[in-house]
Image (cartoon, rainbow, N blue to C red):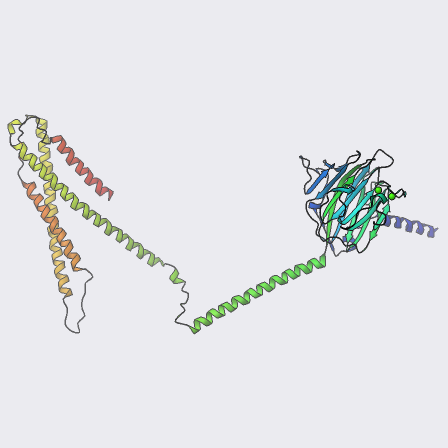
Length: 498
Ligand SMILES: [Ca+2]
Ligand SMILES: [Ca+2]
């Protein structure tokens, strides 16, 4: 009895083993699995609103919806295809394709193909795609063209780009592996796992009878399959006189890389980086040594790098600021000096004009109307003129003092510059004698002008004599006052501006 139970257990375990699919990364822990989202599609939201599938391109009769790609509808003589835009570059990979082949007839046609080819396929006679492909074709061939009663069949054909598919004989003699499975009109979607590891190609099928996603049956295995290093993935389908819906619900791609190889690659990269770093450090050391040696051999030629010389100290900066400020003051003084001379000229002109007016108005006192306001205006002008005279006099006094001091300074300079006896140190002054002379000349000139002005100002005021009441040649009191006020405003404005 015990033996019977053991037998039942063994059979059950075997059935489980047959119907279970184990991922290559589980069998070989050295393999690192990676999902390639750019080589995959699945619902929901498989397609964008405009009907395109991200990272894929499709054509012919193919239509993408939210949850599937209908490669062909169940209409006669249809061809459709969908291909990846990106290539797969891995040597080890796994495709997991969930699809449905449904038709109203007991027999369907023609079938569907899953591709991995060097170039993306174009519309052609091999289940909707081109002949002479370079790579792998897995055919779900529904229609029994050669009447050997071996369809529907799942067949594998690897092509190097030279062979043409023998459609009338369902590729008999060309296909490298196959399994007869009825994949049409199943209650659930069927699933294919196409595994390519270490050049070994294996196909497992979940035939859509049970809801168990992992209920896979082994279909076929081919070793030593040489496929292109890089290639495109695609699905195509075709209908003929009979027609099925060929729908792909999921197309999932995973690639595998060897953990050890990856680690070695990483180590190699790290080693390379370390080598570069070492090389750079050696180069830097040699360069420094060469620089030092050169400095030792040529101490006069090489100027040591002086960091301090590149920067300005706080003291230097302040000193420079003071110098710049003084330079600015000197320029301003020169400008004031020029303006003063100009001003003196103007004052002189005004003064002479006033004198003439006074003479003119003094000729005929009887001609002046006895207007009280006008007499007051004239008095005011006379007072202003007297004030101006006093100012000019004090200015002249200042100039005289200045001239006296300059003379003394000149005398001192001349004494200092006189050569002394032998053994005695020559005392030099940093004041240039010619400059002082120039200043003295200018002051002398200003003084003489001021004196003239003083003399003119001291002339007794005479009331003008007017030949005619409305003599336009005589400047009126109001105009004269305006001129004086304007001059004062200009003067104040000028000094305020300075
Ligand atoms: Ca066929
Ligand atoms: Ca056949």
